[in-house]
Length: 181
Ligand SMILES: [Mg+2]
Image (cartoon, rainbow, N blue to C red; front, side):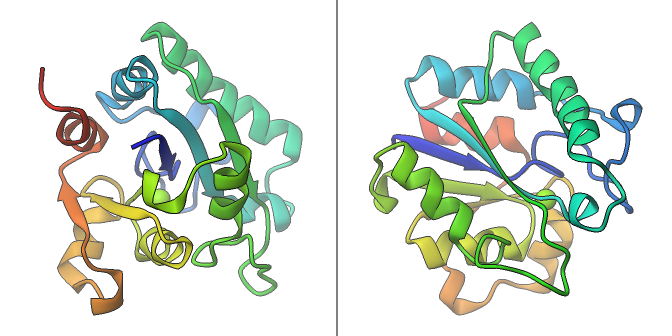
């Protein structure tokens, strides 16, 4: 494994019904920052691939989105972790491009940037759209039960998405990837 592709909301930070619209609303999921640091220390690239339609819909400006992401960067920094690259899709749902998950455009951009074969990358997300994008890009797939993950699992996963490893949260997923030592 050379590259971890992480969804943001519901994986790194607590998802909100109307999505995070202000830095003050940003709360990390316990253990997620330390898990990113573990990936860093293992020499695995870490990229965030996130749909942020709040930007395309004009609810959150690009500048405000960066301030929200700064909160994530600061939380990671406190644990000695870092995101190596951010891929953000601002498309509104009614006008999606191939970058908006479930399409694999952002994942393919990340694979090119990190010069990584799809089979050496894992998509970790809480929604079926994350798994769809991962499958379309040819990456391994992990579902975390944080965020929408428990509901995604309860709904059942389509056969073409399988196999999907399911873990309670990012910390457990990383522990399984790297071993618990
Ligand atoms: Mg999510």
